[in-house]
Length: 170
Ligand SMILES: [Zn+2]
Ligand SMILES: [Zn+2]
Ligand SMILES: [Zn+2]
Image 1: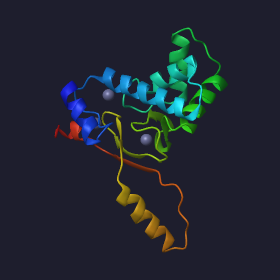
Image 2: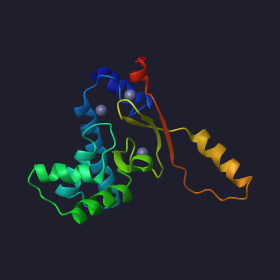
Image 3: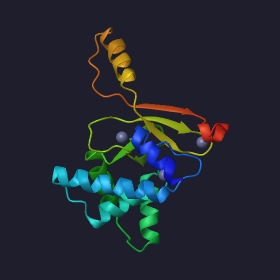
């Protein structure tokens, strides 16, 4: 499915987890973008931060901090919880991962390097979280909020349901 991956890239639909795709390409892309973003920001992408990032990117399913910790322990990296939380904070701070509030879990960002909050479609069947961009939503929400005299700054949107793959449309 590398063809469709390249197409996704070109079309700006990164992050849509197709039914069958070469996830190694997603991870390779994500690492390259993270390296570039860290370089631009002068942030240190240490081995531990990189490994935590890879563990978050293990799939398109959001993973909890505890899950990351367990994996590191299995690998004998035996990091203390605060170390892992700090690594996750670093990734959040630099926009490399998002926190999915409804799941209290983390998922890799598909377009790091731009200031944004994630909008997610979260499948209740397969657990994948697909990040999407829809500028008109932020405009509509901002308008609705300001009509109430509210100064909206951050919009995080998590939509639960069934993804196209699980519905059988892909
Ligand atoms: Zn993938
Ligand atoms: Zn993102
Ligand atoms: Zn699904």
